[in-house]
Length: 522
Image 1 (cartoon, rainbow, N blue to C red):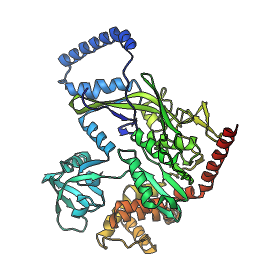
Image 2: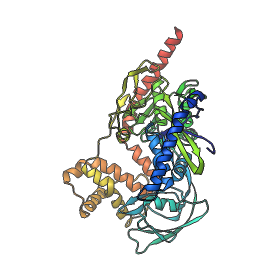
Image 3: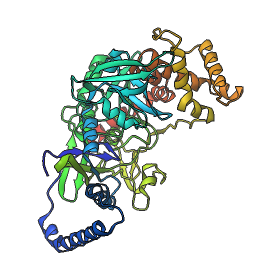
Image 4: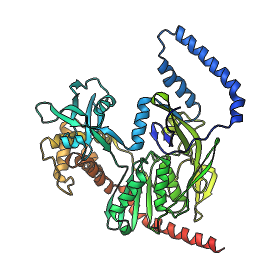
């Protein structure tokens, strides 16, 4: 092995948090050597037979890196995995939160690569590339028959190098060509704004290299001393670096409180604590979670729940309590190996059972995320919590599934209308713009003219949903994707529910404070 070991928790193809990898116990290695040597010998014999006799020539790299190694890891658990050079590079970019390129989201639509959103201030944004532009050439090379991943790879490159991008745009008579200078693209993992006076909203998308610092800076820019209540949104957060999750908890918990502990077969137990503490800031917090809240994000929600520091609202989280260590290997590859379990401050193991499930059922929650009734623990104030199936929220909130019309609109209708609308309207929306009755009527007419099938009753029943999601799409085109997210989150019914739950969050803090004081007195 070469290079530094990286320490993460891992969800499929996504980084989530981490630990230091300990050495194997010598006695166990010696006892297994004879069996291992024989199995390796058997494997080389089989490999030689395949190489000599297979109908098609054997590709050694594919056989080993795509076959043998992943196959071995799949016998261990759902999260141990092998990264080839491309996957390892993407993993590091995800952890660092930056890469060198033009700075825009692209997506495959109708066998084309379409710009969904240039990032504000990015080279693509400054050059004038817009949402809806179809990328037809990169450096004079046609993108026909290319995957979106292949096109995205062509857009990336060393800093300060140039890339020529030709696009087709609705309303333009010919292709538009832009020469864009690649730059380092840094996307923050933390965003925040005021919902109303005294009540702030902070979204943590993942836990990268700089997340805890971004949180500090976000709260500082808002003016944390003015916060009377905070909505902390961890929905869809797949996790990230363990130390950054600990850093986030450190900001909200009291100094010395346990954040998480990890225990491995070949490594000693390690306990992580808040080292700086919240400096007396104990405003109520409501944490939003869902089934995609995983690993390092579960560390945060679990610690906040166990210490009664926050009211947890939403769905039961993913349920991943396994810790992976990412070990760099030669040829820019890496191995992510499960080396430990992590436990919440109360001692809960939140890992879901995967022993009787396919990995598909495991990833898609087809086990129903059952909690472990034998793993019963108590929060600081004496509330009962369970391990085994993720973090169970204090208050359930589940967004209703999309109905048939909403599915159509989400897939294509909203995007297609926005592209058509801005081909004939000013590119910038006025401050505070929201779809009015005229825009909704135009939208309905556009859908009917383009073969969308729905009744008047269906459109009327979905008016609130349409109003919110149409605003989200229009703001991407008429302002930028960051402002779109702010508008969308500020009109979220679950965020509104979080505001109404602030008294429960405040009551938790008071109850925990009283119980802890009574225990200290005895």
